[in-house]
Amino acid sequence: MSTTRNILLAGFGGQGILFAGKVIAYAGLMDSKEISWLPSYGPEMRGGTANCSVCISDEAIGSPLVTNPDIFVAMNLPSFDKFINDVQPGGIVLIDSSLIDKKVERTDVTAFYVPATKLADENNLNGLANMILLGKLYQETKFCSPEALEQSILKCVPPRKANLIDANKKAIALGQAQ
Image 1 (tube, rainbow, N blue to C red):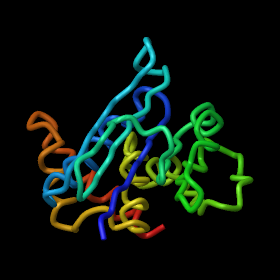
Image 2 (image 1 turned 120 degrees about the horizontal axis):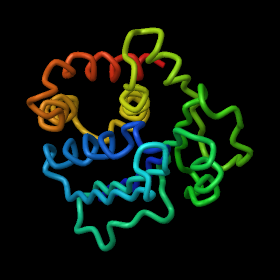
Image 3 (image 1 turned 90 degrees about the vertical axis):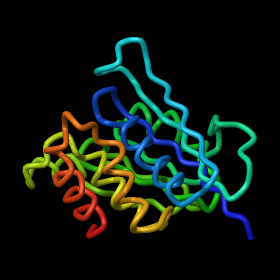
């Protein structure tokens, strides 16, 4: 049986949406899956909207654009409002409940509320709410092997920021514990 995961991550520019998407995509690549990573951001980058479509599949991917995700990660209210109704029935929704005080009204999706920004601040992991949500996503979906996730962090964190590798790993572990 083939598995395809269509993931949409969305939030403000500067929240690490594209980075989290890249980590997910590289993890799929490390597991020898077919992947696509399609970033999209508003004209103002930081503070504007950003979203990222990631497909991980056992088969060739027809389109890199995720219009009906089976996994949706929302890091701000405008993104939540814009995309929540596009999620496939049976899909998974992860919400940074520190920044979004709305609840999912749909009964055909599974929602997880993670106070990622608050957890990041409390654990001296400022700016890593995205990785906390990625950890929760991994915990709920096992979208890759543990080794692939580890390798992906090492690949995606640039050498000049190598000091942040451990913080990223800690943030993922914190998300897994939620």
